[in-house]
Image (cartoon, rainbow, N blue to C red; front, side):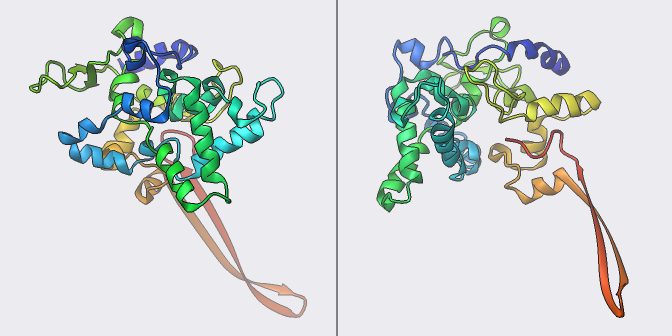
Length: 312
């Protein structure tokens, strides 16, 4: 079943992923978020913490929890994308940061904030404004802290993975609805205020992760970019050679990191992904009348991960 879904999705991934999903908060209420605060409220997953406290704590440690800010590096890359990319491309229509619209920022937010599709262009402008404040060395500490707080209000949280992106084959499996959450169980919840529980056919499949950690160039965008390529190399260099494990099996189960899902930031993940073979040879080198000790070190690095390293 996994192989069949992997093969079937290839054509579907060529379609735009930024279209608002029927049943999402924006379309269901007939309006879109106009500010970062409104978008954060629309995708507020803090209610999940009450019952799933350990999972929520794991997620809070992850880079998913600060997908726009990142370690600071993501925010810096967004600034470069705007100032060097968009403002440098003569046909983009962006002459200054205030010109940025959702379609421009989709180069980054298709993966770092897919729910931006449920917001107006004002939110894209607000993100860029806060990125510039955060990255400006002339900004006060207070201004930078406030900008960082705004940038970390929106992220890849429970409702993105367990609702918005929980279905890929929507014509087959239906469109995620606002009153549903997807996981491994199906049925009504003992708490009547809790969304209906539904099984997602991809929750334990790599294709769930592949929606963002993708195949390469985003050809559905007006100006394709190539950032995430993990899912592509996973398909062609790992699954094609008989590999069977999913992203979740390595990054959640084997690593014991759960919803923290680290990669290169976790030492143990790094050790399991790359093997080193080291060979050393010592000898004496004669330079004229002078004898000098020399060392030859050969290092071989072997990729044990199910995808290329590095990515992005």
